[in-house]
Image 1 (cartoon, rainbow, N blue to C red):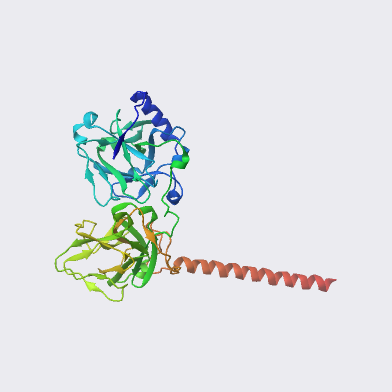
Image 2: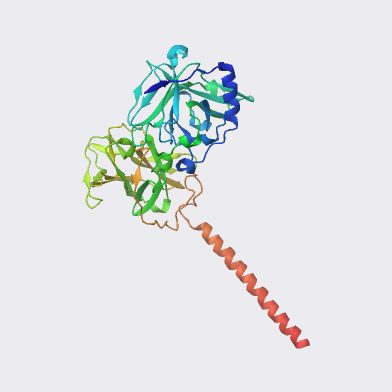
Length: 436
């Protein structure tokens, strides 16, 4: 799988200088560019994918270090895991790895390589280590958390050839509290080999197709959530804003469906995760497009609600703060153009008092090559808040339309002033006409 790289004549110090200056000027792509722009992407501690800049803008293709900006809030003290991937489809982008000789003892055994889109990982620590460098901007300088490497081999990243295995890699790095103290920004540098020629960077031919959608329904109110930015993520949480007015005290019914057609190969699958739970009585599955439901008695569907109390999100059911024990993953939507799978969970809310926002959290595996069908247009409810991902934007539950009422008062007030002005003008005109 690996092919030897040509040796670089420059010493490591020079390489690092070039790397730093290049990364600083490399503008990252936006999430919407993933379908049109060849990029390297990084996932930090299981979060959303973060994108590099356009790889076609590289001035010196070859053995390069690509910078991917990281939100400091994604980092934590202790072990941090970084997964690396690309949307390039033909094996043109290769990830550089090094022998273990120059790696600190504490970092050994922390690198993986996969050929199935992230469904499982193979430990390659006895052979090589993935060349990534985490660096923090502190006191007007970049500070490297781990060291660079002087030798390496390159392995395929993304798809080796169109339609074949999907390759990704990961590495875990220890970050201390003192490392993070005073840091203003962060960046992961990824060592990749890119051949000459823009035409060699072919994107996934399915990239322009219909977006994969998670269809969620809460007490009869349906929402569509685009999963494009989550593609290639394993054991990740998808958040869906929910209007407080949609929820109720007592039992709330939540269903999950999708427009994805999955095959028997993970990169082409969308799956929901389930956890073991003895005497479970709130989770259900349907294999006939939700015409009938079968209950799970020994597991739960990994779905929960989160309510915002003004300072933090509170998970419901109480105590289910994503500490689920992964047991099994099952396809959401169609499987092999045949059976259609959907899931339901009944969640009881004791009280909604004091909560201003809500969101649904769904635990899923999202393949990197999902095929999806068109869905009918979705008419959003008038009381839905488009900005509910940002807590505190929704009005108080007791009077959810307070803002609208104020708008009406202002509107009628201005209209009254305008009518008074018009009447005065007509009266003045009649007076002037009488004088003539």
